[in-house]
Length: 353
Image 1 (spheres, rainbow, N blue to C red):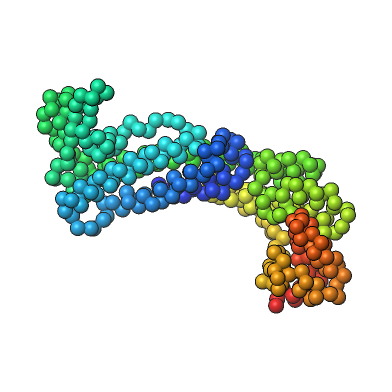
Image 2: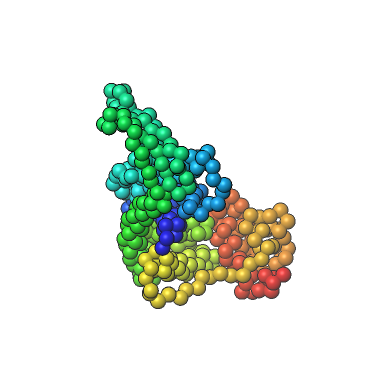
């Protein structure tokens, strides 16, 4: 992987797993700062500024002394900025090692950050200014330092070496993060496999506890699947077919979601050549009209469907349950899910309209 691909992979992990799953949050000591998602800004800055560095030497814009000075300042400042971003990104993954002792940072600080530098007692330490030989290919500057009796000293840095050193720094730190991610995913996958293996043998309460601890994002995949609502569904499973159906839907899609994540982890994050496990979600046909029932649309809402299926007692029962529970998401969407199943089973041509 190149540098940008490594960054994309880290961002994918952050957005799709660390941000969503408590398992990862606990492992990384996710704190109040992390919950602001400032790390998302880090990725945004990298996306905006990495091309400046990677395309720098290929830029064919006209050369002039002013442009060369401006480009050199911009390059060094972007590198400095990205080093600060790396420090923050490392922190979010639990690393605190120092990366500030490097030639690129010292060059930026000396020439751009503090061209006139003083000791703590405010006496003059050094002063610098750009050399006219500066170009897109090299940065030249003149330095006068106290430890050299303020005698002239010419310093020169090749731009390609500056960029190469920075890319090496990025790669080293990104790889450190990716190695930690790999360890986390190895453990996470183990937990998913345990849930998958015990899905039909453990008690429902223990299953829900394991999902809460290690796979909590699944609770957000459907309103009925929230922790609170699915426990209600389980307790009511023998009271009406709608609850039994939603419980089966929860377990079936849970199994598929676990398998889907295991496959993704093997292929994308662990890079393991393991056999892909087959799975198939319960993904019933729908259409525009039925989708509008989800929010009880003023035209294609409950009344429309009661008129449309007035001859079908089972469907009317579910529609009346929805009508009587407009403000009760649990009841409304239990019936909505079951209604989709009933129409597909008894009147499948409706979804072809």
